[in-house]
Image 1 (cartoon, rainbow, N blue to C red):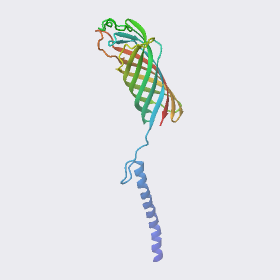
Image 2 (image 1 turned 90 degrees about the vertical axis):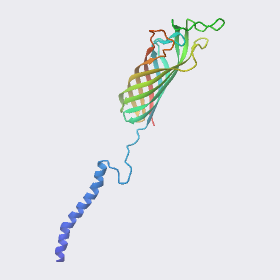
Image 3 (image 1 turned 60 degrees about the vertical axis):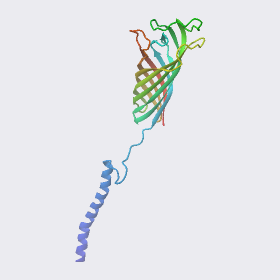
Length: 244
């Protein structure tokens, strides 16, 4: 009788024990596969994609601007206007970032009288600074929100879209450095679209070259009727990007 019971236990008990162990191990494994959080624990989050910082320079070509405040037309010519430029971007995923860009430069500009603005000659005895035309310099600023998409190992392409402001300040004659424009920063709404090429030097370092095309809207105060306040921009930008 004892021998008979032992044989029955061996026959049915071993498979039952194996099935129970399989069920116990499969349940948590299945929960992991379906992404369920542990009982009583916080949901698991993916790793942070980090931040990108870049520094470089931009060669900017800009159309002439009609400025009613000074009563002048600003002509920047066809030579590149150099700006220092940097960005700070938050990586949303391995191929997408969202951030801000900033640029600054002091550039040459030729100014000439803009008829019909109401800006009159200085009073008698006051210094006459660039009454009709002169060679001058002006500070240029740029602050944009930036969206970037693309990337990958080795050689790759990407797309950028920007929107924000262009700024101008301290218009001065080039030879005597006399100021005849406002020292306050004048801001223009602006935006651009760009296409670029990059090369990944290491997982956290990328060399990038971008060509973008944009447009700005200058202040319309004191401009004659029918005078355009828009201008186009074209920039070639080179930068070294670092991830941290």
